[in-house]
Image (cartoon, rainbow, N blue to C red; front, side):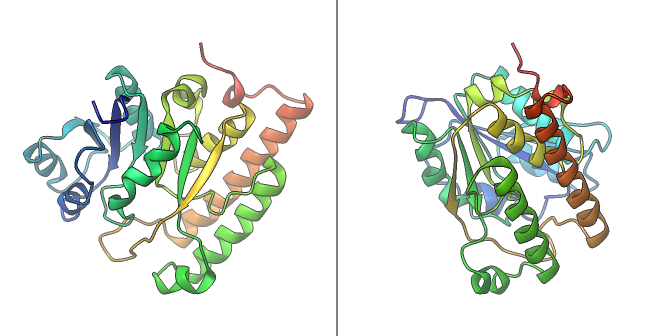
Length: 250
């Protein structure tokens, strides 16, 4: 148990992270995490072997199920293992895992229920860190629309660096979400629907060949699915439909 008295588990949705996993784990400061869970989505490299050599609790999908499906396994296992706080750290070394204690602190002190590691502080800094221009433009476009529709002031709705309290994962029906990348958008939309407090922490990121990234075509598909998720949210709020995305668990 960490000094906060709350069991904290890092979850890592992994796919071909052999070259970056150890660096990511080594950067997590000691004393702030009780356990690491890695879910391997049928990697073609030695991700599983590296994870086990590091003493990480490892679960292997026998087929590639997708990013959203990987998170479903991550969160289900973390809850089953008694986590009070769950933080997702991508094992591709793109996000700075040295900042784990700071992200966790807002949940430990009951300031936020959901904390996002935001890649967007200034346009210049974000582009200098290597975010492709088309990704930056699409991020700004979608995030602006999401803030308007959802009534939030989030700086980066599409970051993969996220922490949740146990209550969030016990309330949100995340098993009803997509198995693809839009899982993340659905989850934050659900967090807003269920009135959870969302906060952001600025984090530096690294863009390099080993870091995971979706291409332009899949980014476009993701953008359309994001807009569709917002439409479901609006229809749910005004009573036109009842989506399984917003059916409270328990």
